[in-house]
Length: 455
Image (cartoon, rainbow, N blue to C red; front, side, top):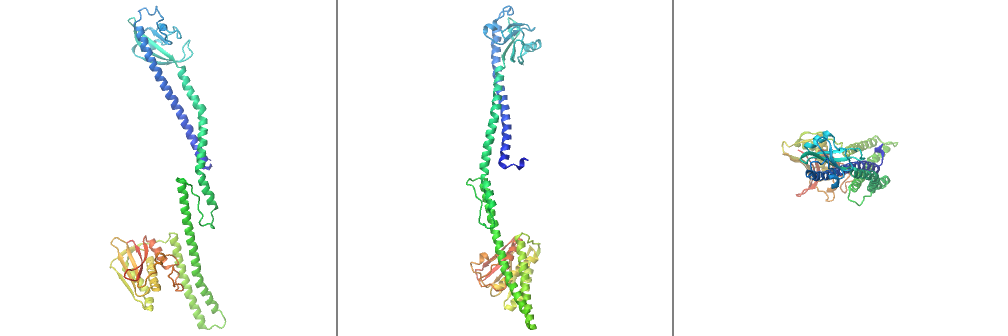
């Protein structure tokens, strides 16, 4: 039930409970401490009075019991002199002749100092605190008893208790109200952010939450949420661009397929023309299949589901395999493929994914580069292994930072048949292996594109 209350009410309730417990503890500690201090003061006063009375009776005549009034003449209020048999030798008027100690207590007091707290005695309507000490009167042992009423002590402790009982609830209500106001003020920015978040929709991609001026946890929360909104907005923008580019890339081959099929379906078409149209359709279908595979790889990479099944591979074998697959195309274009790698250079990687990445790199070099193409492997010895594909062309300087972005193509590359996903897939495969993809122009001329993966 409490968990369903607003946070400010829960904070106020917890504060009120803690405050109430604290007030009770403080009241008890204060009352107990006050009582102890009063008892200490009373005991010190009793010891001083007992010493004075003992000195007084020490000089009294032997017949003290026949000539009482010594204590009354001195002005004592509660005092007695008692002999070992329990008989009162001298006493003050308030306690009269009734002994303040019984015989057992007298026997104890003859041997040592005895502190007692007694309830109301006959003739007295209030409790007493008594101190009995051994003394000598007229050459014989006696017990001197002095006392003081505890009315004032009890009244002082009682008044402190009443003060807490009367002022505690008022203080508790006042503190709880202050806690509620502070909690409400502290949480007001959160409510403001919640209200603004409820208004944000897809039509306001740049909308952000209001952030309070105070440098506190709520401000950091607002800044973190705004950073999250910026990342979400960036991801949505990438998705929208991806969908738009994918739609554009799909539209062209689909339009060609439709046109070819419409031409083939016209009456009077010769078999050779129908065969040519169907061949064109087949090429476009292959292109669509490759594009669908590439889009699937990118979708998996976006969801961090592009998994690399690692095994120990020879870098030289991977490069020769990639060169062999592209050799026919290179020969058709009159370009030379060359492999250069260190013997026994190994790496832990996914064979199928690395072959796909190297195939894309070679295809990119043959499609957009010039001159001879070199496949190179280097590194190892505990460090990363680098797999490069080099050619004699060069990147435009403004293209290098975006070379691995999706649907990025060099100026004039439209219409070459590529979708601009080859290098993006290379980077996704490199990241899946915990590595990176690199594109750069070589100082000696030409360019190279490759990946670095852990050895």
